[in-house]
Amino acid sequence: MTLMGRLLISLAALGALTACETTSQAPEAPFEPVYEGVDTALLDGDLVNFFVAMRGARDTGDVEDYARCAAAQYALIRGYGFARHLRTNVAQEGGLWRGDAVYTISAALPQGLKTIDAEVVALACAENGIPMV
Image (cartoon, rainbow, N blue to C red; front, side, top):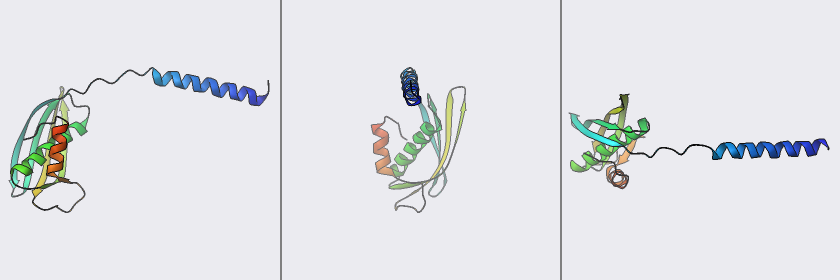
């Protein structure tokens, strides 16, 4: 057998092994979050602190999404259309995830990179089953 023939057989065998490895992965567990509630604290005029708690989060992003949903609904309740994310701290202990997020709310689109349109975000939250304020 030629060198080229052996190389082709080796590549085919490697491809078969790779295919076997990718199909044997276990399916992911279903995402079944339990939202424990939202507390808000008005810090100063348009500056609002959101405290969220949940169980079953996959990662910090789920907690951040929950806080974002709370901020969007809060802005709408107060008659504003926008919010700007300032910071979110997330901690997890014993299966309970906690988020501490600060947003500014405003009637006009604020400057900055992390702005949200409250109405659009609130609709997405409702579609995804994420509760709000």
